[in-house]
Image 1 (cartoon, one colour):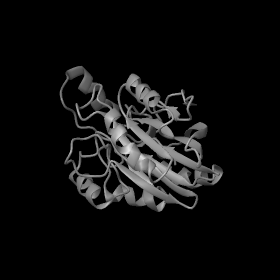
Image 2 (tube, rainbow, N blue to C red):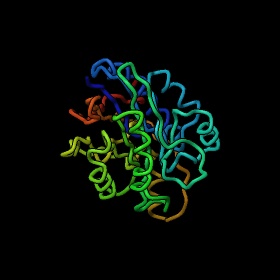
Image 3 (cartoon, rainbow, N blue to C red):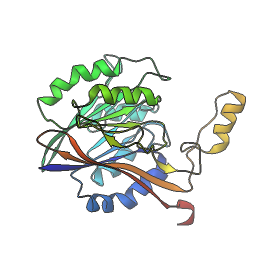
Image 4 (tube, rainbow, N blue to C red):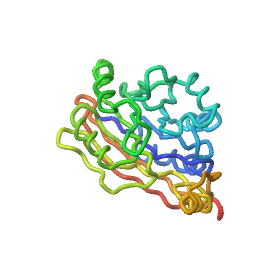
Length: 266
């Protein structure tokens, strides 16, 4: 038996939420999706994910919302992590950080695990994602053979290294964070599906989802700028996985890119 999984790339602000609402039902129908996962660390105007953004996603059938380095940017996001187990954060933050680093999802076809990790290259020097995976995987494997990893990281090399390290130990390693979808989706020799970055679900007339002026000024002047979510040329990015439930291996992987929604022209 196989299970169909959809992973939606980093949702940015209301434009990202709007296009998910527009296209997710048809994607779930087309691919006969059993479990839907979304990275939502930028869903609240680019900073975190509060109940306001998470509720419509859960209402649409999203089973788990993963996070990243912006998870704690809003106080409401922090409080929501304590209250909602389906909204997770990277496991390898230091011991004592609140929130869950993984969640077990029940579907009609069986249980799957969603694990969130964060890289360290060019990012905060948190605990090791490789050792964190080593620690938690035996625990998850007692529950299910299907483990989907959101690897939220800056460096391509770190994502590839983790995928090679976990090949055959997890079902898939889906890269997030850079907001640029890569065209290297594949299945590793021992059955682990992989893409370096799933991409951004949000406005592409922007700098990775934010209005361009503030981003440009940050680079020119090297001073803090007030970022605001952009609005135009909204895309949806995702990855579809077909997974063998008995082995936990990925048997099909497909990159999805929908560039058809422009909020300014609707």
